[in-house]
Length: 217
Picture (cartoon, rainbow, N blue to C red):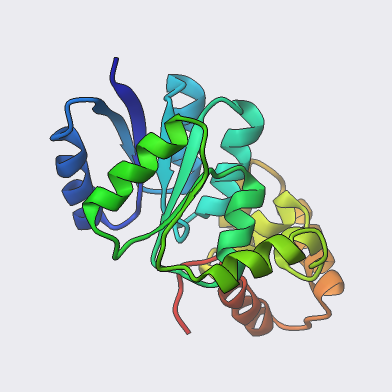
């Protein structure tokens, strides 16, 4: 029986290329693709795939938050993070969100296939390119580092922060999250208070540093 996969990446050419290669494997079936975190979370809920391969840096809802949502709604779905980021914070947060593997985008295709089969057998997988020191540091500090956005802010506050950093207006954010503009403003004030940041520019820099947005400094 084929492994049913949903592939999520906002880079269309990369997604199409990976889709083509995965479909060339007799035991793999890509049942859907998604360009952002909200879409992949919704598709996972509707289609109940065996696995989701998700990029971290995606618009509207980043891969870490999408993984957290998917894992909470259906823990049986295996999650593989496929990212260009080797920063230990991203590795740590993806595993805490429920991922079973973290693969760097510059890996060879065979490594991804190995990771898929390893995860389906119940084993975690991390790209060899990520040094042992990084992994050991992650394990050591997993429950000690309370300073990241994923510890300080609530899930809704992180969503508001990401959308704000992506240039969305209060009205657009309210429409996207199905809440009032007053609620969005309240979340924004809470985020600023918790982070000790008093400007939108400061919030944007923080969101970039914490990997909540795909924007580049």
